[in-house]
Length: 368
Image 1 (cartoon, rainbow, N blue to C red):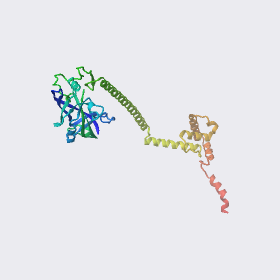
Image 2 (image 1 turned 90 degrees about the vertical axis):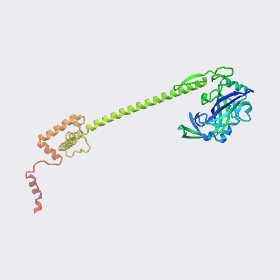
Image 3 (image 1 turned 30 degrees about the vertical axis):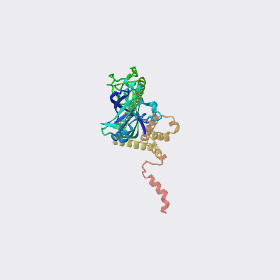
Image 4 (image 1 turned 120 degrees about the horizontal axis):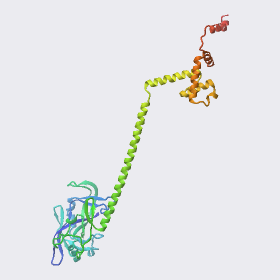
């Protein structure tokens, strides 16, 4: 069972000839009420909306539990029982507990002079201390209000006279008996100083401790808002940097696509490569050119013609000039070209019958 405190409203107050204060009051209602998580033993939850069904509030056992419970001055630190009743009780609830619409109506009798003096001085709001089973789970009440828990098996323990109840001025002892406005005061009329605190556009009256707690909470909320704003700004900066990187990559891709040669350009490159290979092998037929670049092919051809000493420290431009000169020499000097072919194991000269003559001499013995 979970312990709760709730509010009540008192009306029709009168003082008996013995000095007792008698009044009727509303002490419970059906519907959704808001509690702090700490009140319900759920410290991880800041606020919990609790639904109290009609059948829980007005069940026979619930109504019976309100009969003859003690009235206390403020909430005691422990439930009222036979062990502490004498020290804590300042009055009691009589047996005529009734349903009044959506609320529970009880007759209240205050018998302690000090408690009655507090009420006369303005301490008139009421709060009910009770226990109930609490079922955690989200839902929606019949009136459309969402909730996170349901109360069942309500059992009242006491009704406390407090300075400020959960539901505010509606739940109080009626003030028409004394002809003075409701306030926060002690016996003798001394006012309890309250501070006005602005929370989310709403002015709230509270004690110094309450104002300090609200100020601390507002500071924490501001810090969280600042941290969230900083996180969002960092996220935005990261997104902008990534967008810039994507844009750069897109531009590089577009440039690369522009540099891709067309089919005609590829054909021209292939012909130029084939011509270079033919030229190099024309200078040196046994030249190994597999995997060589154009400049490496020229260097290999010149090296085969002129040797390492001439080629070793020559620049690419010098090699290109030597290659060009070698090609020119071969075209202008057919004898040199023929000897080059002979060195390569080939013959480009015309046979003009000499070869046939030499073959007849060489093969004459076959006809004998």
